[in-house]
Figure 1 (cartoon, rainbow, N blue to C red):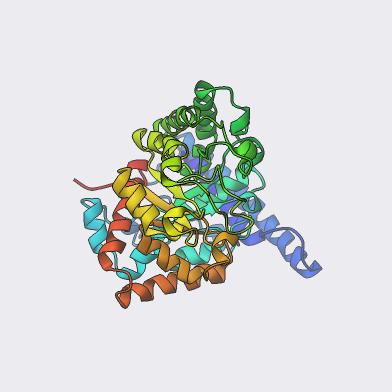
Figure 2: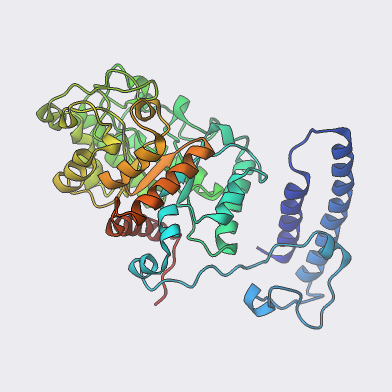
Length: 435
């Protein structure tokens, strides 16, 4: 980014922090207008300075935060405007690059290791949202944006950019920035691709193009991955979210979609393992039984997931269905027989296992969220997603941290989960290793 563009970018970020959202008492609005006038002057000044740099009138030295000592360089004067609206650093050095994922796993303290295992949703659509303060305080594994966080592509980019900058400033591990962009009416960002719901896609070739288009739109906005595609075999409960009721057709859809996202360097996490096509109801409504025998599950629902694993899916979302393997009483996301014995040992999956939203009624009907978080980690989940509320997220974090300290969750289980998550981040280019 050249000097002129940096000047405008700084002023825009300052405006966002200073003005917040419109509305409020008259006095607040008058104060905002005053700040707006100051900011306009800052914009003009930035343009003049930038123009001078572009025409060669001035060639300021480029320095990192460390080289500059975190303040004004010796022998230079800071303008009134710079003091009033301080620009963020042009370049922020992150933590010293680890020699390897194993090196970083060893270096992180326990509190940060545990925080890295959490994906959290949040309320708010601007940079005043509480999540950004939490990202400064805790080295969270990632955030999940949904329709409640979205207004426009530009506004989305400001949210993702803030999360990235905070991780650099605080020397945290860069977070995943995920969303469930499944297509058509099942998109969290309604005006962004993919345009078609899975049931509307003609074949695997079209599925590949839909995913490529989505990746081209999402990646520049700072989204690092999607909780998609839904590769459940069609059934009454799944409806138009399913590509087909033919397991082999869904397998082809899974391969094409995952491959397209992988080539675009966007994480994809197919769902909902081991399959909800035959569920008695949606897990968003409550506990859902999947009344298939293990053999029936193998011949139907597991076929697309085998294809996804063969296509090198970097992550898989484990759903909350109730299965015969656990006498229809334990959600799959909390079940060792599903997440470890079936997904890991039998199917050979080596990527990131993500426990679906633990605030779902299918889980809260049988367990408290903090207890579910502990159970999910012990079952073999590497990341656990909790959409809301903030209180449940924080209680779950403390529950997992205390469970490790008490030996209820082994430290090796935490390290194993962290290695998989960090490896996925490294493959996405979020973590750079030193030589």
